[in-house]
Every structure is written in C-alpha cells, then in structure tokens.
Length: 303
Ligand SMILES: [Zn+2]
Image 1: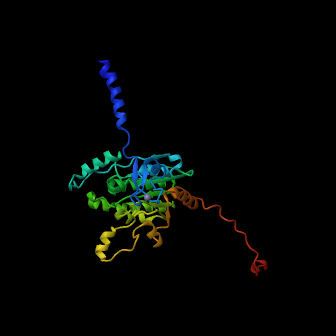
Image 2: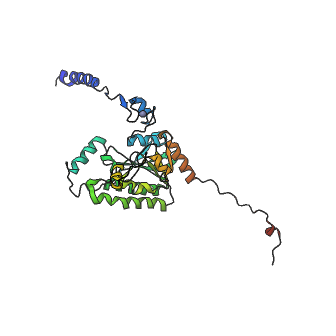
Image 3: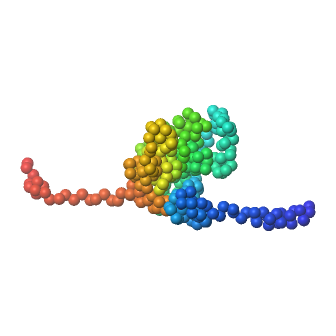
C-alpha cells in the first residue's frame, strides 16, 4: 500500500482529466441557414434553429422528456428477439453493427417504449431512435411496437408513436418486412379497444415504416420540415423521369395533399397532443335531449 500511488496519483489524474472534459462542440452550425448556434441555447430551444426555425433531429430521450409531464416517464423492458438469424454480412457483420449501435446509444435497439402522464392523462409513447442504425425497423422494433400497443390496451391509454426511421432494416431482409403487417396488427389492437392512436412524423419517416403503422394514425401530426415518404425523391425522379415539385415529401407538402392533418412547430407539439387527446378522450357530457313542442306532439294521440 502506497499512499502516493493510491491516493495522490488518482487525485492528480482527476485534476488533469477534468481539464480535458471541456466540450469542443459548443457551437453547432444550422444546416439550413448556416448560422452558428450556441449548443446550450439550441438545447433549450428543443434543437430548433432560432434564426430560421429549422428542426434538427431530437434525440429519443429528449423527445420523451419534452412530451411527458415534468419530463417524468417509465420505460418498459422490451421482448428479446433472435439476433441475426440470417447471419447477414455486408462490409461488416450485422452482429457487429448491432453491437456498435448498442455501445453508441446505450440501448438494445432503435425503439423506446414509455408510459406516463401528459397533462395528467395516461399515455403510452413509442419513440424511435434515429441514432440507432437510422431508426430502422427490424424484429426488435416490431416487438417493441406490439408491446407498446398491448400496454396501451392494458392501461386503456392513448397510443402515440413518434417514428424517426429510414424504413425496414435491410440486414434482417424478409424478417424486417414481416414487421409491416405485425405493426399494422398492433395498431388494429389499439383501434379495436377504442383508443386513440396518434402518429407524430419526425424527420425522416420513410420506407417500410411510412408504409405500415405510421400511415394508420387516427390523426397525423408532422414536425415542421420533416421528410415523409416511401421511396426517396431521387429514386422516384429517376424512375418516372420527371422533376418533382418543390418541397416534395416535406411535412407542409403532405399537409396540402391530405396525408398529414397538422404541421406543428416542435415547441407546440406537446400542447397539440394534449388538446387532441383531451378532445378524443373527454368528449364532454352528452347533451340532455329535450323534446321540442311540435305541432304533431301537441295534438292528442290519434287512437
Ligand atoms: Zn437556421
């Protein structure tokens, strides 16, 4: 036992390493207007550029915090799925890609299922994490959505899904495509229970995700400027050999064309959801039926 190595050295190390922890990403450049934004300020503004209103992608956990009352919620443990049954490999093994994504994000797959209160009302929320392999939908995400739908039915709570996904996970091939009908059934369960199912489109919502549960919402809310579509614009242009209109596949364009009901600024998202859930869940007391005196009613019965 040496006092110098056991006590003094760690203290010195701590002093030195704390100096290194000064963040070097204090400023973020807005991809739209190129303004330099102060990191803390951007965080306070829910990752929206305060110069041009450009919505940057919001990490899944920050999304949950902004939605629930006082940022408080519980997550549920999601069912385990078979890992890489196809033994897929491209430039890397799929299992390695998974491990990397898990190490980077600290979660098992691209979805978080949480429940808690929004303006005092019980809700179940499934949020996609785009940082996890582009929020792609494989078996784990499919299971996650089913678990979330079951939880909503069990709690008799509205179900909100916030996709941020490039679509199906190609490393799971047909197994990921199978999640399209499975998640459709999940949505059906919620609807059969007479519970609201709301979808919040965020950037991006494309591919197999938009072609399944995401387009089945009772009400579709989209964050301003988010990309929503099935195939990529470039692929469509090359296929039909035509130039696509400006703003194609953007939230505002889809609103004009009837695929989206509401486009909101991120700061208004929570209030909008609360209002809609309130309207759908508490339609108010039914009006008392009062018989109006009519000519027919005033006359004595003909018998
Ligand atoms: Zn900007």
